[in-house]
Length: 386
Image 1 (cartoon, one colour):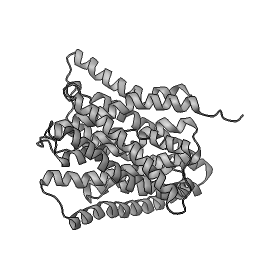
Image 2 (tube, helix red, strand yellow; image 1 turned 180 degrees about the horizontal axis):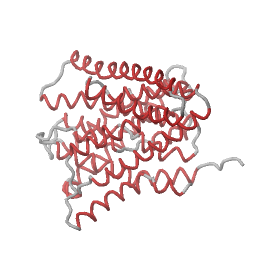
Image 3 (spheres, one colour; image 1 turned 180 degrees about the vertical axis):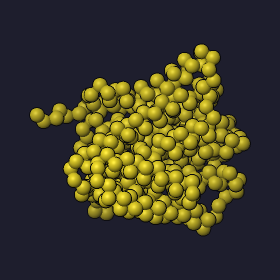
């Protein structure tokens, strides 16, 4: 493994951010950043770059070949994970923590989404089979998008303190998703027109970065539709352009976006470690443990059942055992879960518990799960042919 990959490893970056914050606190500095600042930095500054890069460099052939299974993982099975995890959290924390079912649903939704940035950083260097890597990337990317839209719906319920009826929920969900797709297609096509007149690869790369930010801000802040969906669709449109452009431009786009996303991911992990508040984790340690067990159990039970259904109903080819294990191990959480916590209504009685559970599960995923999975997968990898 290239030494720089260890430097950019999510686990080490989170630890570095945490130790940096503790060191500054010992020198008398106040490192407790306002949540609005953290949210703005990560949501508007970093997340668009990460999602855009994954969409841009996604293997289009592998995506469409496995689209049915990716959709199965990212929507029906994700919803099932939300349901199972929410019931487990409500059963364990409901009465003891004044934790209503809505709080359990919010927490489960925040935590079922896998982190695309972590999945790419952890699994891409392992030289997995192309299908396994395509499924991991597709599930984490599309699952995160679906979880963000579902979380937006639940957060609206939490802020209004009254349930939405089925029609309202459908209209709101459709607005976010369809609006994001429309903005992404429009931005992608406009971007293609602009890139067509840009002669130099450096200029094309710079314009693509500007396009990612403009697309996200226009969708999320101005039109109030899903910015993540818009950036994802715009990235897929540019992906089609990338496949047909000249070799020099393609190499430049790949290299530029690979390093742009790595730096954005690194800063996001540092920010996550910097924002950890230890007292809340110690105070709510029982809730954190229950959250870790609930999320892990929900993923393994739901995926095991989902794989059986996929292989035995209809004419779909069954997944191999090693592919099933790889996908189960791919349930790694990251900054997306933390970003959703920042959007919680601060006056809700349960927000403190949700914050502790989400931070605890994410830290356990990055500090324990990632090293274990990475080491185990690396030890089992087949040597590359000479």
